[in-house]
Length: 148
Image (tube, rainbow, N blue to C red; front, side, top):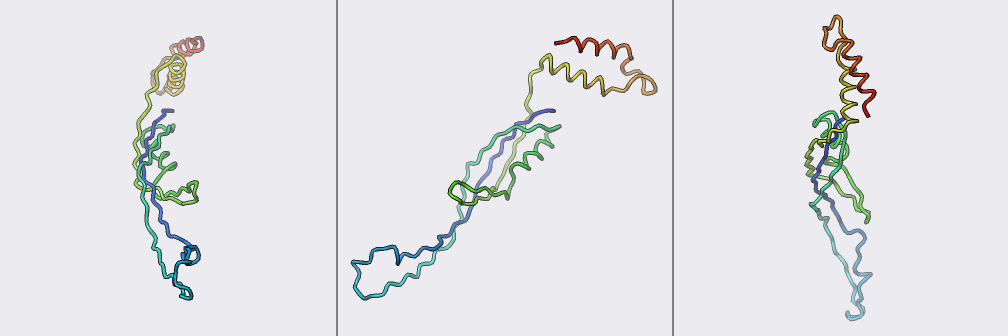
């Protein structure tokens, strides 16, 4: 089965909002006027963070480019989540996949496998027509058994 290199470019986004921030309890008010009450009416809104630069490369086996892209989409696609080492959950967005077949160099072993597979797939002589006469098929299989 052919192999394909997949190049995935993507962006990570997340939204953060400070939780439990109470500056009145953590700041030093020793310089403030004694007896005055401290009021902390801070309100921190959530902020969206977007980080570009996602760049993955991996290999999949597939019968064709379309199937390779489908398999790659099962590995990484828009809407997937990833939790980083800090515990933040990131949303994977703007995924762009590029799929390219890997041209493998022909070897004696791979040629043998290809020809044997083809010989077994071609219809036998008879009603289907004489695509490969029986004695030619037998001779080719004989030679293939003795190659490497």
